[in-house]
Image 1: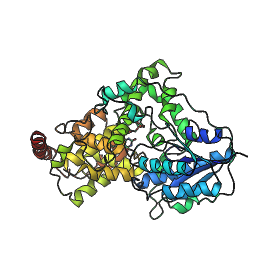
Image 2 (image 1 turned 90 degrees about the vertical axis):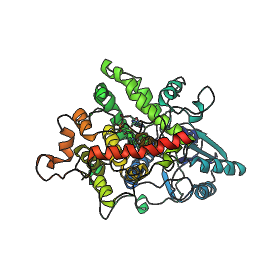
Image 3 (image 1 turned 45 degrees about the horizontal axis):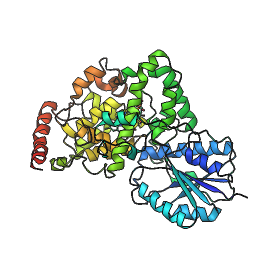
Image 4 (image 1 turned 180 degrees about the horizontal axis):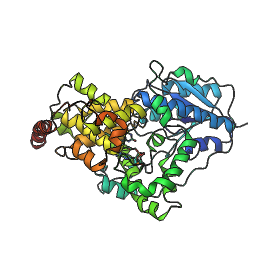
Length: 454
Ligand code: FAD
């Protein structure tokens, strides 16, 4: 009898196009499908509240799908370097398969691979969650790209892999201990703030495919309106990609499949946004401290204000008196999502009008976004701050009033989230936009000075 194989799932909570799961099935024996909740290992960034909520539901959906195919999801909690070898021992597995990670946690995988191989266990890792492996896209000098356009041009030269078919059925050993998902406490209880998330989202692979299909058929043709937050013009696939309910390879193939002429016109633009995700992951791959360290060191000289509690809370709660900022922050708090244009505006307001360190805003988004992503979140915050790769220049300060006039001209988005805007309840702005902009530019002189003295 063939020994069991272990498929260790991480941010790839899907059955279709999952090379590690496929390899475990093709191994020929029973398959132990393991999800490990690891908040302890070095290099792991513990999830925020909104992603914990998503993870719970996505795992529940995956467990259902697996059992529909004869398999079973095993849940364990603890540090990977302890738990994975323990599960291998308990089940008598002779092979372990996983899809690659690209942040600091890849060190855990490298150590595990060596250790398991030392115990004569077959180990293989696969490319699954990016279109291109970060180390394969380089400048002519063999260095990582720091600018998006040449990165994406080079990335697109590479062939995109074929889709990996979902196993129709699999058998899993039944007598393997598993935690109870409810015991992990991923869902909020007191208070239960997740009502807006439940209303807005349905996590899981099936729902992800329905969303992709809806997007391609009904929305992609309007993607050129992606900057208008009141329109449904983008895919809303970000949490799906975050948890790997869909792979970018599936999205790429679908966007190159059967499309209306109007959708075809927009497909390149849409895929270039998926390309930004690739770029951000390649930046993280080469700079694993991206959430803590300025990508451009001269920004270490920036004199951040010690954040005033009242300002920070007004921003977090959507009470700044700046309508577009407040609308965005309330959308975020209620649904776990915020429109991209508004993310830029709210981030810019925190950094450049309140002079609060981008890392503080990044942490808030990390806690509240359902798509909070180890690469995209810090990379985008640093993009807005000016300290990132291929970033907006610091001196380009978004004016949230002008942004609202341009991108929400009829105030539909603002009214949806800030209905009191039309009455006299709405507060005065907590800062003077003009004066704070001038102060930000004066503070930026420190960065300029650091740049010239380096
Ligand atoms: P679409 O426009 O449909 O784009 C398709 C996919 O491309 C997205 O799902 C996403 O995976 C990727 N993408 C789109 N825009 C970007 C971008 N600017 N950078 C990187 N990838 C992109 N995105 C996250 O996935 N996780 C985050 O934690 C995150 N934090 C952000 C923080 C700030 C301050 C800003 C300005 C942006 C952030 N973004 C983040 C990027 C972007 O806002 C979201 O990916 C996008 O709004 C998701 O909506 P969508 O799926 O409808 O996007």
